[in-house]
Length: 59
Image 1: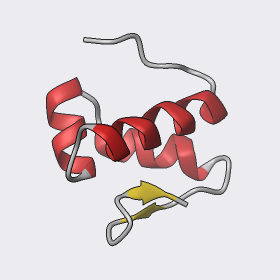
Image 2: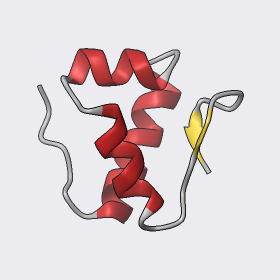
Image 3: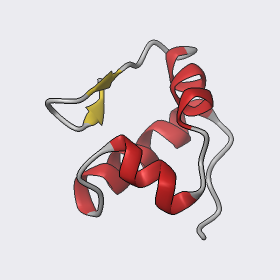
């Protein structure tokens, strides 16, 4: 498992890259990376980003 950034802005970049390049959904990413999806959403919401299922990215 990769080291996941703690900084919300770096986390945003990491997650969106993972979603774009490797995962068909946030759920698949969280399951594979053993991440808590709700905690991830909360952390990215703190920098005003929300998951868009249609785009499969945080916007």
